[in-house]
Image 1 (cartoon, rainbow, N blue to C red):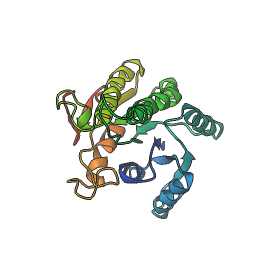
Image 2: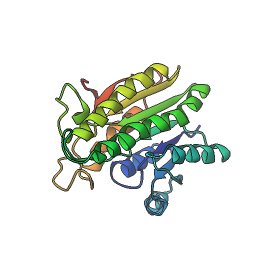
Image 3: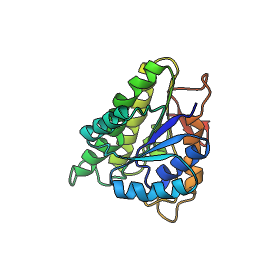
Image 4: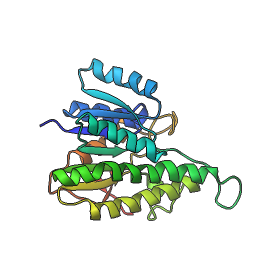
Length: 229
């Protein structure tokens, strides 16, 4: 049976590569994009390779947009088996000076976005007794690594890591929830000087999306290997 994967922020960078890798493994793809035109352009490349790709408008910072997407898919009879919370922002700024807008944006996209998509799609996985949820986090959100990088980004990703652990507890049998660090990847966010390709950055998402039923849950991974929190 073909499984369907929803990838948020799937129109470019790591998200698009995750779509590509999952499609190659035989998944039907729901490509979530805040800008549908950008999503359609990305989907055209995947469809040219013979892959099944559906584009949906999805702004994870807006819970109404998330619910509208979920309702539209439900009306079309599309069930999400794999949820990849990839959409994210690299918010700059300090905690104790300057504008608070970077923190607001980071929390809205990097933390509350996955929270809202989990609430929209994980109950269906639980009812069907199977699902995989992958939260794209960062080593900068790891306490073990010192919460490095811009403060708002690090804190929002640390919150995402905590969300991952708690979602895994509530997911129900057959639903595995994990997060991953793609590393420093050559994308618009990572820049041209980054050390890793998008294929390398996306690979762990493929690993977590295709875990066997006795696979890990509530974990943090990089390069298919468990990482400290």
